[in-house]
Length: 315
Image 1 (spheres, rainbow, N blue to C red):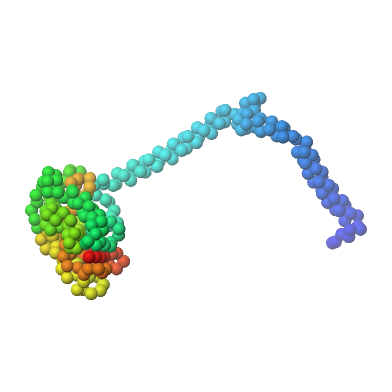
Image 2 (cartoon, rainbow, N blue to C red):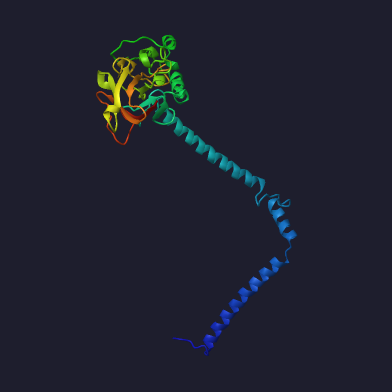
């Protein structure tokens, strides 16, 4: 059933709607009038009363008791959170050993690194200009200071060559380290030729394996090193001498027990003496480890079992 605007029922509905609209308009007008009558001083007074009401003795609308209960609640709440966090950390640390990592992201086989390492993996100098090769010489002397014969004799012991130096006992006991004297590097020791061959255009470069706790390289057979031209004419690299011996890492320097217990450990080195390299040319060289369990052909990792660097020797 529909109601016409002219019918009595329709007129009553229209009157009610008009009354509601009028009431809303009147309310808004009254609110605006009240706001319009307040001055800035009134507003500031209300704010001051809100911050501190001396009659009700409230601050920000709360009494001292109310604030005390709230602060007590949050103090207890955050104290419990801190206690739970500290307990979880304590339990986690109980599962970790300070001597041997529980989980290792680096596993065998190891990576390798060279010295000197100054400006990336390009070793460039002119024989006739001392200033171009002296920084390499200084870097070599600084690095080999820990390998001085007297230092090694004072801190480390002589070991049996050709076999792993396995040390038992508690893992917290300090481990002994085998001597690696710089004199073992012979022509690359910096003792007789203090320029490491750089003054003659026959540079020495040191290679070392990265330390891995508990790793025994070569599975009983010493790991060896060789070098070749990576890309280009193989005749650009005509002669390389290796020290000590035939360029191997002796087994007696392994395994490594970590820096906390193996305090005086010095990593064994292999010196590569480049006695005949093409002059006035960039020669890319790759030196690789060889031995059982060694990986040196992963293209995505240039340091895994090998290293690539460039020699540029000017006259």
